[in-house]
Amino acid sequence: MNLMRHRDDRPAEQPGWSLAQVRSRATVSAAIAAWYLVYTYLEEASTWFTTAVFGLSLHTRLGSAVQFFLYDTPKVLLLLVLVVFGVGIIRTYFTPARTRRLLAGKHEAVGNALAALLGIVTPFCSCSAVPLFIGFVTSGIPLGVTFSFLIAAPMINEVALVLLFGLFGWPVALLYLVTGLSIAIGAGWVIGRLRMEHEVEAWVYQSQTREGATHGESLTWAERVEAGRAAVGDIVGKVWPFLIIGIAVGAIIHGYVPEDFMASVMGKGAWWSVPLAVLMGIPMYTNAAGIVPIVEALLSKGAALGTALAFMMAVIALSLPEMIILRKCSNHV
Image (tube, rainbow, N blue to C red):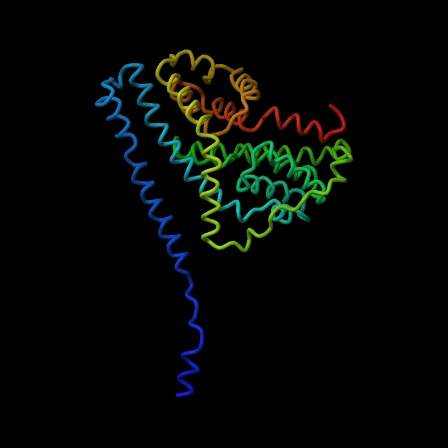
């Protein structure tokens, strides 16, 4: 009897997943299934609204523009919500402090490649990546490795990567990824060879950056999911106006801009189209969610793929605010 009482008094073994974890996983699975169902029927729904509700023909300019807007708006929003939620979870694994630890002590060539790859999964925009640049320098990470991260973080935008995959397929998304990585690794390697550490202001090396939250490695799954939800509310809540404007501009281009005009300006035959597209993109500091629909419309009107991608990468990576901040970190103009 005493033996039985002793066994009954022992605490029950904890299951592998708690009830909260099971509910969290079930909720996420149901949300993904609903997302996929809605995404599958978007094109049919947009066509029905354009023709049956608005009474427009898809063969007219107005009808084509309206159908483009009605299809791309929910499509891009759905893709944006999915990728921001996923990145919000990934962000909990890659705090600034952990990122610095991963880069510290690596061989410079390996560090350039690793820094560029980390730039993909650490979703910092061009301006928020600059404080990390200071933190990396003060941690003793080589300047070239630091710049590989600084270039890759905004240029290989996770939102743009997923949207390109959803809108154009994996070849275009892969081309964007490989091009961005090549630029980030190559530019970091060149900066490392130039030995430009003396160009950095002394106060940068003397700065004592505050460590970010390092508890991300011990979060539960439910807490990571909550971080993903918070990221959706924060990021999507900020970018949706730019998204709507971008899709509206893309709809106008899709419906009203002649194909011959776009082919002459951004087509394969115009040798000056790529540098012109980059120069046009520098002052247009916006996010990937707003520029990708415009790129989609440009391609549908005859713009060359390379030119359109160069324009997009210039818009999201070559920002004037970042240039101004970096100027404050250097000794000379």
